[in-house]
Image (cartoon, rainbow, N blue to C red; front, side, top):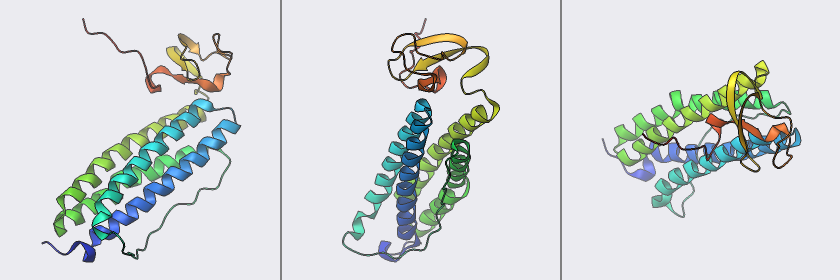
Length: 203
């Protein structure tokens, strides 16, 4: 079945997705600010990086809507409100929201787009759903570590990176203070979660 784009549910779903991704970006920026105030700078970095990816998702959905340039498209949508100063609660909320997008919201949007004859939009919904799954898993991992007191402590020797200067070291606990730049423990992240991690050379 193929119907005019302006009359489709797909167009409305693209706008819902654009609004949802835009709101997620702002929520994660707000969460990053809270993390910085609580001296969890590495956690703030992850929220900020995820916010940038949500912005990129919003742009994908926005680009699909350009055929309706200049029009107003009314939609109904329900979006989460998370007002808390507890980082753990923000992580759990983000984990839930990302998994919901992956598990039900975007797959249903993709199915509708396929049915209505918009394969490109369907592909975008499916591809971004897969990314949201990774976001949810990352937020869940960080929440588990924070909840169990393992954010900066490991039971086995682990690599840590200072996100300010890039210093790395292997230890059971992230340094209380970076030995290179003197930034506090909140700047450290497990090496497997850090950007710019060393590349393993092939032998």
